[in-house]
Image (cartoon, rainbow, N blue to C red):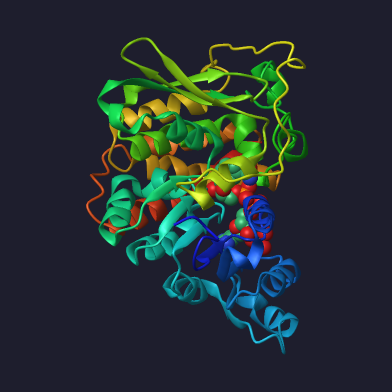
Amino acid sequence: MMAGENAPRRLSIFGSTGSIGQNTLDVIEQLGGRKSYEISVVTGNANVELLAHQAKSAGARLAVTASDERYHALKAELSGSGIAVAAGASGLAEAADLEADWVMAAIVGTAGLAPTLAAARKGATIALANKECLVSAGDLFVDAVAKGGGRLIPVDSEHSAIFQSLDEGQRHAVERIILTASGGPFRTWSRADMANVTAATARAHPNWSMGLKISVGSASMFNKALEMIEAKHLFGVRPDQIEVIVHPQSIIHSMVGYTDGSIIAQLGCPDMRTAIGYALDYPHRPKLNVERLDFAKLSRLDFEAPDEERFPALRLARTALERGGLQGAIMNAAEEIAFHAFVEERIGFLAMADIAEAVMDKMIATGEAKTMDDVFAADAEARRLAAELVALNEKAA
Ligand SMILES: NC(=O)c1ccc[n+]([C@@H]2O[C@H](COP(=O)([O-])OP(=O)(O)OC[C@H]3O[C@@H](n4cnc5c(N)ncnc54)[C@H](OP(=O)(O)O)[C@@H]3O)[C@@H](O)[C@H]2O)c1
């Protein structure tokens, strides 16, 4: 059904106050607003004022803050509006339980896993921005979506590009997928130069405007590392079929290589609204008011091999892919702890990868992920070990 053709598509937005969430609401306005989309739920965390404003202007049935302490503030903001309010983990569970055809999964980090998984089990189609769901839970998450009867549509620009470039009938002829990476603000920097950078410098992405975690992840290339693991689970390819190429202009969003030597790519100006619109209006291609690519003004497109010495996160992703099992969940959890420590100026930029690698090695004997409990246990243990290493690192500094 095309949104707007018959009944409006019921949509829940997990993480509506973030960068993807705000762009999602902008796209919904462009696609006809309430005529095309009925918003079931909006969720946020700290930004209660914006959440309340979004809930009112989108006409949501429920607004949820993940923060228990902010429940009363949100309740006060929405008093008299008729919009239900909830908070904390139980509030997110309530959000996942509300009927929705489509869920925009745009909470940052592993915090997004439980509500997205619950919504997938109920059969919603998942527009997936939260790559951590796949990095941590991998095939368990993919199976939950399939068993629920919905489907996964990637929102990450790279994975959206691959999704768009995959010729459905020709999956057997896919030879490789090529993820492009801008290289981030430190693309040409030496490790010595990177040693003392602050979060403010690291978050200044040259091309994309994004949330803090993904911006710092683009600088360290941990974001690309997560995307490599995300790609394996989304597209069912072997690790050796996943390539990364640095493309500083971020015009080619990613590519698929076929057995006849052809490459099919998706291009566009760097604007997340294109990938969001594609995921929300799937299987149709919406009309969007975004900047058009002007080839006459593009003087060049550059490409270079990624440097895994200066950006060890890429090497860690390969290790996680080769080791399999819970190593993706472990890498992701350790990196989340190290990321927060870096942003709080407790550790340096380069220590993030050192800590993730040390935790992956310490937990090398962790078995397979048979159930979600295995995933949550490995995640918790990786966080505990990473926190210990952060403390040791602080002492040594
Ligand atoms: N931004 C992009 O362009 C982009 C592109 C591709 C993929 N992604 C992926 O999309 C996801 C979201 O990224 P973003 O850049 O939009 O992040 P963001 O701007 O930091 O927004 C994150 C959202 O999650 C909420 N949140 C924060 N902590 C939470 C918690 N503990 N529990 C529940 N909700 C929490 C935030 O609420 P408050 O703001 O109210 O605190 C906000 O709504 C990430 O997985 C990212 O990798 C983003």
